[in-house]
Amino acid sequence: MKFETHQFTSKILNILEDMFPSYSEEIFKNSPLLIYLNIKTKSASKGSKSRGSFANHYALYVLIEDYINKGYFENKNKNYFNDYEGAQFTNLFKRQRELPFGQKLQNHAINSRLNDEFIKYFPTIQLKPILRDTENQRYWIEENLLKVKINEKEFNLAKAILKIIDTYVETKKESFQNFLDACLEIHHLNDSNKFQAYEFIKELIGVSVDARIFEIVSFAILKEKYANESIFIGETLSSVKEESLTLYKTGRTNANDGGIDFVMKPIGRFYQVTETIDVNKYFLDIDKVQKFPITFVIKSDKESNEIKQQIQEQATQKYKVPSIINKYMSCIEEIINVNDLMNIFNNINENGKIQPVINEIIIQSKVEFNYQEEEIEELLEATKENLEINLDLIEEDEE
Image (tube, rainbow, N blue to C red):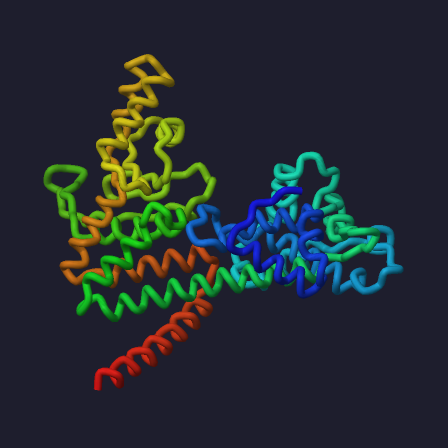
């Protein structure tokens, strides 16, 4: 089987080499489950657009862990499918929520999504990772996918897969810790080094960054911008009063939930974040809200007028009818690109107000990475201690 290599692939191969010396590459190439995991760990690489979701990873993890704990990995004489009544769903669900980043995971991966996605990648394989008895809510890992035969020698990958997933989780956790380190460092330097704060944000919304981070940082910047603006509104002329504009985030980042990303109160303005310049995407978003005007926040350094012109040209080729095109184009209320976001942040930075932006980035990242309150506080405290140590060393050097 063919597989695409990325940054985390080498870690998978290293784990396999440690556990199965001289057989690692052959095992990798001949295991659909390992190739699937290789695809699902791509988000460990910088610049990946994939969500760092753990749902399917943990569906595999808890079932393989149960398989090992029940003795089927060590005891070759036990018949897994005939002897084992299957794992209970409630136990599997409870266990996945005990794992790092797993506190808010739902039941979809265990029940269907893992199998559905696996089949999408391997349509010719007559095996699914999870077997289940829906009537009795019992579950089994597909043991045949755990085993690989190389030159008549059989290898069971159960423990290797757990180690791969553990390593992936640690990599994501380390990545988030580094992100927090950078945020808190900017917190400390914002008054004395506006240029460094500017460069930090610029890196976070560059065209090659993770789409999730772009959405989080875009929201933080725009929320602070509108927090300093207001509108006069009231049900009657005598009840008109000034109200601040407030931007709300409506869901998880980069999720396929069919929703709108941000909404503004009290004027009900809609915002959609995207990284593509594809007319189908824009017109679909407009249709979702029955042709209500939308502001698009786009991960592109092209000028807003150029982006809109490209959308217009694509629409002309696709629809031909001017009245349809004009109706859709009129629903594009505004286009905000990377340069626009940086100009907005530059004004915020010059006014010494970047702390609310950094705070919001940390809050939204906590939601994105499924951190509980106590976990985020623990990470923040560790980061602050490291930062204080580093600052003390800098002061000593200066003396």
